Length: 288
Image 1 (cartoon, rainbow, N blue to C red):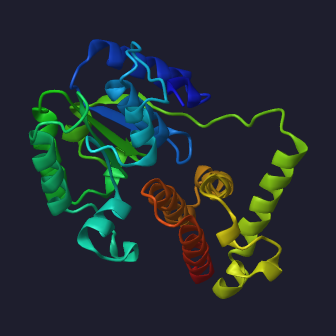
Image 2 (image 1 turned 45 degrees about the horizontal axis):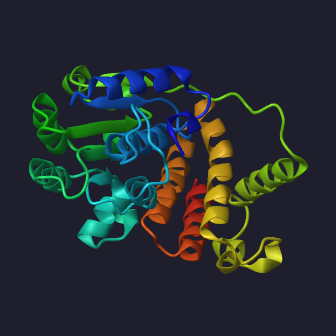
Image 3 (image 1 turned 60 degrees about the vertical axis):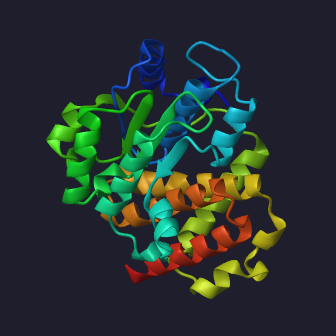
């Protein structure tokens, strides 16, 4: 994948290309609706900074550096989110409500060290609106004087929840709602229909029944990592639609879906990620 793989975001794409051309440490702020490609674009920027193919302002997507970033195991590129924090603290992700000061302090320490493999250290702070006040103040100090050859990318659907001082020190990059693709194959239409049905059933079926094959889907253990990622991406469609309609109850399901995608990139067993996601989504929706 390359920068243009983030489809239907020409404005964001152009800003990122200009930013890459300048080779600046000026932090970036990606904001816009859930599910429109903000985190994907951040990872593509990280690839472009560390790609070994020598392409100007883009990545090859196939060199060792690009493959490591895509797999989530490049030592100089890190996605900081609630799932990462839970893994670092050895706590259940359900206990993570905010990004804590300890998490930001640890990341600041990493950024001050020399890079391990690539020319750039990249920190992608997902769900930046979840920073505690103390954590936000620590982050502000990093944004004011970013270390050499360091890229900081803040990602959030809620720009207005960030401290004004943080917003003022980052280059804003707005992402917009994507238009529906006008031409889908029969298989794609059917896959989206099944996802819509599953989304509706989450609020009606007992949690345990969702992972039973009798409900009409294959056991998750038979699905590959790519297939499960596709399932999760399709579930983001109705979740994003609910957010777009102003439904506050859709915020937590959307967060759970994005956390599941992060866990897949961290090489957690795909079937376990998917089954646990369905259980969490069902409990969240039936509780409301």
